Length: 113
Length: 113
Image (tube, rainbow over all chains, first blue to last red; front, top):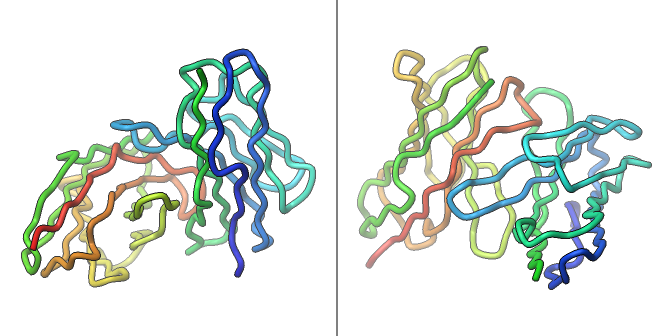
């Protein structure tokens, strides 16, 4: 079934540790995004990529980095995790034409202790 | 810049009753507007979207929304709630018909028998 795969599903991480959240899509979408979801705040954009080889900063990029080496993969890295990064992280993708909705993965629940 | 305000973080409706979720937006350019639904432990799914043209937009599962420019609103309605409508609903705005979205904080809908 076509879609977005995120891994891991959940993770408990000690503060100061490095962590990479994985995201893979098989829809050949040009654009990919990382959002974090926090209670009462909705979803906030962390980083995005309009096409392979390019990335951009979203609303809350500090403490996170991304890379887009190819069309399918868009990993999100926390270089040194802090408790405020405890959240549910969603990867999404979309085509870049009109009438192209976002397709979301099922999320990664991250707890930083 | 865009922003979205969803009125009411929780809404409780009786099965068979009208569902009304309120969304107001601000945008410096003509907006593209979206409603997404999130079921427990899942990513978001597109319910409907307004890009251009007809201001009354019909979506999946019997939902519809009306774009009112004069009121800067995009309220979501469904004439008769079903138990399966219990979920969290997010309104979002974008300067494009795809891509980087500004989400509201979400409204949790509970449906009672």
